[in-house]
Length: 346
Image 1 (cartoon, rainbow, N blue to C red):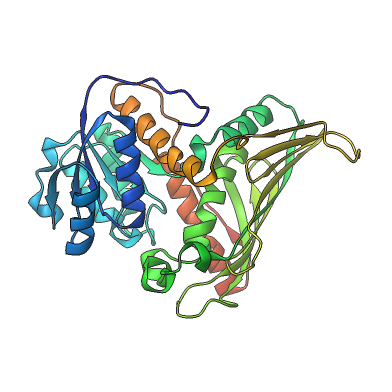
Image 2 (cartoon, rainbow, N blue to C red):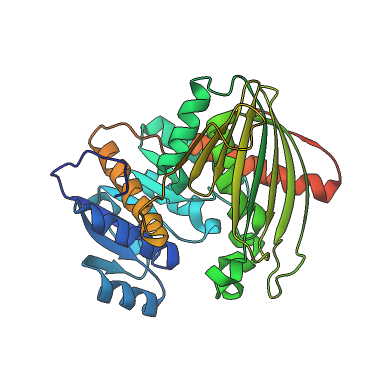
């Protein structure tokens, strides 16, 4: 479980995983690792459904969500493509079933506010799956910024770029290839960075963007974006993503009036002068296997959701935060389409 300790309840919860594709399998493994869940699945694809049944202890399996009695479950995890999120969330709301939905929240704003209003009025537990929030290094970064370690936060540089086909060789046949399903550098990849920004820097106020498909063939989505964001606090951020370069770059630098904090993959680096060596550096991956640590985040996220069912605290992204995230992503696209800076209203 990495270095983050979570309380464990003794109650076995009935968890329905909706969608058994790549991300659904990570959630199945994560909830299995908690030892706190009896798992069922909804998956229309017969092969994916059969593979999940073969590799996990599945209580019930369904080819259609209409075949499942949602009132018989304690929690749903929505892992279907993003264009299906709103109707699936609505089904959970109708059954008064707590849920976690994968990012992005949706692909358009149609029906989103109405769904969020129903969740609020029902007092329903609902979160969105930005796994980076459970990472120890990100929690430390945020805590140090909030404690004033770098003074007043003023500027943020982010670069998250890699050879995406190396990690997802099937990308041309997945949701990623189609903008209407939530694929592309902005709705898919940048949403993680937007969540980090919203959690740390607050509400965005203005956004401008350029984006294009520069290299990756066989998709209708962008593989590159350059995004500038201004926050209500006055802080500014620059977000850069390309999904074709050979080096795997993952850097986020937060610049304040008295110092800088940078996340370079799992390394948290603090500088408060122009000295060649940083004042502090800690590698949160030291001694860990990267892929195992990445999977562990899904188990940690699962534990947070199961703790929340038992009344525990849960800092995973709320639907409201994910709504701001979605509006920011769509406004970024609008900015380039209309060649102008977009004002984000409340």
